[in-house]
Length: 131
Image (spheres, one colour):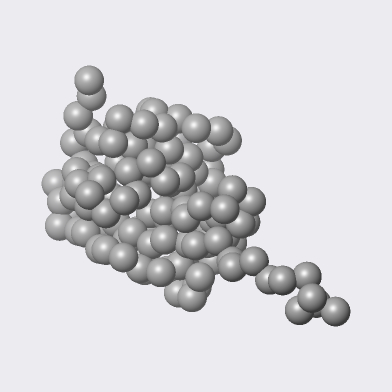
């Protein structure tokens, strides 16, 4: 069992009772999402590392992923899998597809902040509406 040294407990504790403990979790960087995933005892994923993971990889030169890119990726995934996708970011998303649900900061790491947003699948559009 691993215990992260970050403030990931608050977002994980919020996700669990609010129905998102099993939802896909997407972050810009794996070190931010993995600490929440460890608390939920399940893998997470990020835009800076392919696949699911349960560990953090710290590397110099980690690309900066803007919130628009992550919301676009989350929206595609939500539609593809027809499920809500949780987006964890350090800045408040501005994309209206990301519905902000919670915000946590002031952890052991002074600049650590978690914005929890949910991107929902788009409702099905009847085929007759496109004719």
